[in-house]
Each structure stands twice: as C-alpha cells, then as structure tokens.
Length: 512
Ligand code: TNX
Image: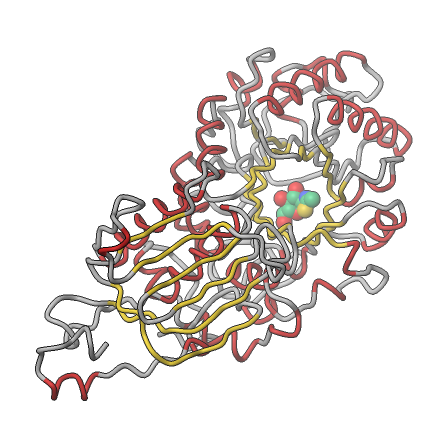
C-alpha cells in the first residue's frame, strides 16, 4: 500500500495505514478456517477479474462477481479481457483439484496485497467463495491512501467446506401467491448466505400455482384463489423455467412440491373426479388444514399425477420432486400407504428422487426417498431405519411462519414463538438423538404464507432468522456460537438495507 501510495502526502499514509483482521470480519455463514495476515488488497478501478478458461461456468461466476462489485462500489471490473502482464491487482477464480477441497461447493480464498484467488473444484465452489468475498469488501472506500477510491479487503486465507449438502428454504406460494420478481429477490438474498435449495410449495387447498398443459383448469380455476379475498396467481411453465434458470445462476436447486393426497381442495375443485372426501367442493380461502383428500383408489387420480409429475419434471433440472404427504387426516391409513407407494413409482419413472413430509415414512418407500421432518420424530427415525436421508425442518425451531414473540406482527404460534436466538440455538446434528449426522441430508426453513401477502411481510418473517439457518446448514457445530453470531448478524444491516429488506428489528440484536 505504501508502494501504491507513492508520491502522496506521507502524513496521510501514516495516519491511514490499514490494520486489518480477516478473523474479525462479519462473515455469515462462519467459514471452516480463517487465518489473518493483517494487510490489505486495494480493490480499485485497475483491478481485473480473471477466471479458468474452460467452459465450465467459471466465466459466468466471474461475471456475477463483477456485477456484485459494481452494485457495491460502482467499480466496473473486466472479466477475462486483459493482458495479464500489464495488470497490478487481480481477482482470479481458479479451477483446481486440491485435496483440501472436500466437496464441489468447497473453496479456498487467498487474499494477498496484489491478488485474490478463489480455488474451487467447480464453478459452484467458486460461487460460494464469491459470496464470502462480497461480504468482506468494505461498504466504504478509503479515500485517503490514494487519489482515487480504493476498497481495502483484509488479507489472509479462508478454507471453507459446507456442513450439510442440503441447505434449504421453502416458500409457500399456494396460501398466498408471490410473483416471479419476489421469488427472484428471495433467491438473491438466500444465495448471499450460501443457501442452495429453494423448495416451492406449489399447491394446497387454497390454490394451484403452476401451469399444467394437460389439465388446464388447475390454473384457469384454482389459480384464481388464495387465503382471504386476493386474486391468487400462478406461474406459466415459461415463468417457472425463468425461476429455475435464475436459481441455477445462483447455484440453487428448485424443488417443486405438489402436496397430496391431502391439501388438494384446489385440484379437486378444478377436477372433481379427483376428490375422495365425499363432500361437495367449493373454493377454500380459509386456513384450516386436513379436510381434503384425493380418491386414492381411482386410476384417473394416478393418470393425473403421472401427467403433473411428467410436465413439472420436464422443466425441473434438479434431482428432486416433493409430493407433500402431510396432514392427510381424511385419508384412511391403508389408502395413504397405497397412495404414497404408487406415487413414489411415478416420481421415479420420471427420473426424480422423491421427498415428502415426515408422514410418508409410514409407507413402504425405498431408501432413495427423503423425509422432511417437521413434527413427528418417530417418522424421521423410521426413515433413517429404512436407510432414507432426513431433511430437518422441526416446526418449533425452523418454521419461519412462527411469530418471533407475542408482539411481533404476522405469523402463527401453534408450534412455538421463535425469537432470533432460539432459531439459532439448536443443534441439527443432535436434534433427534436417534439420528446420526450421516442420516441427515441437511436443514430447511419453511415459510408458510397463511398470514403474509406481500414481499415486505415475507421478509419480516424470514429475516433475520433465515440468516441463522444458513449458518446452521453451512458451518460445523464447533464453529457455531450465538454470542459470536449475534455480532456478525448485527453487521448485516448495510447489506439488508441496500437490498431494501424489511427485516424484523429484534431487540435481541444490537443492530449496527
Ligand atoms: C402445518 S407443516 C402444515 C402447513 C401449514 C403450517 C402452518 C406441514 C407439513 N403442514 O400446511 O401451513 O402448519 O404453520
């Protein structure tokens, strides 16, 4: 930095020589290992981004980084279009096969005075590393060291591996519909904290949210209702593909859920032949659960499901299809088991791995099927016994639709009030004592939308709690600590405010 500042006022240099400490940066999720070297990389308009050249996605991650730096600093850094010999300072995204990189999402971030190097096996790993880098570029430039603006990035080394491969959020677009733009904003925010799965709850009693070309009334009729008197909405297949592509750019997998055999009033109202509860169908815009069911003994129902799973799977590149399966209170147990077993075969026929809420483990599913634990530990334990992986979404800890406290707006409290500390202070690895870490695929924070209608309300329930779930998913247990997290969380305000996020300003956090 002294070299860079050559010829400038010496007094200024002495006054402003940066003392950095990479270990004290407010990175969330906390990386596996941080070693500070206490100097700085001067990010400025002369810096260039360079990436591995093979057509493996690194260039696109470089473009994403350049765009992110522009949003934060207004600098416009070129990607791969410079003669390297003339370059002073470079950010290099490097494809490599180091043994320290445990997974395809792992990365190493080396920051020295003249270079920032992100090493990763894949573009996905480089993308995760880029999120860390975004977090340590200061919000303010240092305007005293040089005559132009320079952002001082602390030097050192970060080695980082994910704790769980599945780090998810769920959004219920069925109780209230959320637009493509809302979903994209949520993806932006989730990706910044290294969440890599977005589960979309696309159907429920109150509405059907995805175009199915072979059954057009699903959206023509039931795309128009939601909880309350709102007009609902749905995604055309083109819009859904747009969401999937946007998520893919953020190395995020979309997981579509069609909830069945319960939670199906909207489907049965559009096509009464599907109905199995023996009652006259009406649109449902209330918030009760557990009153609807498909007729599990009708061939037409399975033909319908085959079409739905086929059409959605064809536009879903990710490996998973979620069949719901929760709260089928008016489906006889033997019918429920018969149904889940048959639907599992349909999902597999269309090349997808099945996920269902924990109740599906009562059926005879095979070990490739995944249980999402939300309420009954015995179902998750039975899943593990069958050899299935478990996603942890325990309602009393991980439900984003639970109120923070009795005074906070929006949300329910049937499972618990979940203040920000309680949301963070649990150990997924030990939450169900009969489960081993190997049984757990990861964690997911569901946001049910009975009580929220706008993006601002969505953000109020999701933030800041989702940031804690991101850390539970990515950071190993020994590196997690509420007192330390709390300070890092308090320092997310510049980002959240820049992104115009309506987070809940809990008094548990000493917001910066
Ligand atoms: C239970 S959790 C449900 C949802 C509701 C939610 C409200 C689960 C698998 N089913 O249908 O929206 O509670 O908190």
